[in-house]
Length: 250
Image (cartoon, rainbow, N blue to C red; front, side):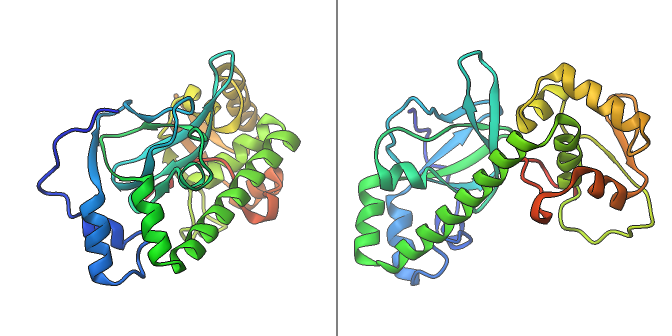
């Protein structure tokens, strides 16, 4: 994996401070971890690591957006998660050994810290409270993947798509009586990779949701949700969550 020269304007200590894993460490320990870390500068579409590679370290997203995927034998991909600043990547591989669990690609130009696995294990030996943070992060990730598997197995594409659209709205407060209008930030193929389908089926599902008046659709991107509660009821939002990796609209 090629490491580019260290970026002078990257505050590695601050990048570690905003992560759940390292935020509670004393300042001198944050500086120690920062000294171990190298910086990777990724262009859009560039791979950080592959599920076929042996794990070499823990990664912290400094800026940008990355997606974690698994690839099938037929070349199709399933997006597992979308990661932004403050996220940690490859914890399971670092502490469990072996190859990376997934392939990670930059969706936008991104900066990532890499901490070699031996060094991160050493820090955990010296500060065992970190292992509780690791356990918490991994537990949340297991729950997220369980919800994703449940949705892929039990919901048809129309309902998966409805959940995905609801996930784009994020957690912002909404007036349930008012329509919401937004532009889709993804192509049909990108949506398919997130909800476990193919482009043609996603296109048909969008048209179907439009026909039954759960959404309005103008062109390729402009979507209106006239009744958010109706779309939620149609989706049967599992445990009130939105399991498909998306990008909350700001």
